[in-house]
Image (cartoon, rainbow, N blue to C red):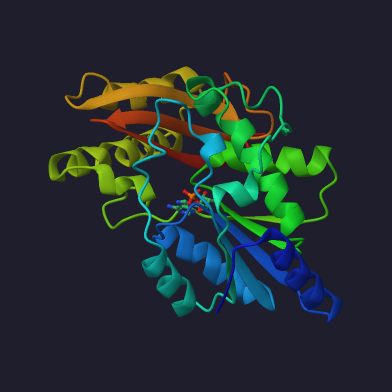
Length: 284
Ligand code: AMP
């Protein structure tokens, strides 16, 4: 497995692969791999001749009081895991390589970045779209793989690709969960034993919402309430938002119809976790 730290060399390698007729799949990550990351890499492995994983903890997408400094990192471990799933190459740039100073350009997607996580984390999605746009230029792949775990990120990147005519196919992979339902996340390592137990309530509340819908409930307000009832007032859990939104333009729905995103963010102790389910309702 090859490691590239310089953008110019990375781009040259990708251009060479593509010129020789090979397809290239890109998996952008911030590292500290878990089963979620590995599922994206496996899917990319199945669908491409060459798999490139980018590993970059992007300072631009962290707020000033967020966890950039303590974000878990272990390159040797990641390298081994990537190798085991058959990744061909890792792009592992430094911050200086990605953001030579002065760095003056930003990619901004409007409106759909102003709700949900975007509201609580101002500037976060600008950081995401700026780095992903750069990665798409540095690694001109055929396909790029993202996880549904970060549902809003998926929509924001799809919109950027559409609006700016990026010539890349975005593939979305389902959320990978621990046995008890907790969505796999690099941030789960922050949780103490007790917090880890509590964190299972997040997905359980989404399962409850799904059951309510299966029983025929179509009012978004009632679905949201079924989640709030389970999480609000729980010791050690601070619910930040619950969204019952259409999955196209991330606007609230009143009556569930079509593709509906049910998403939440909550603080479990000092750790902010997100989760979501996507449901399809085709009432006539
Ligand atoms: P991150 O390293 O957290 O930026 O994540 C890199 C990619 O992995 C993103 O596309 C995430 O959506 C995806 N990802 C993270 N956690 C999961 C998960 N539990 N299941 C599926 N994909 C995930």
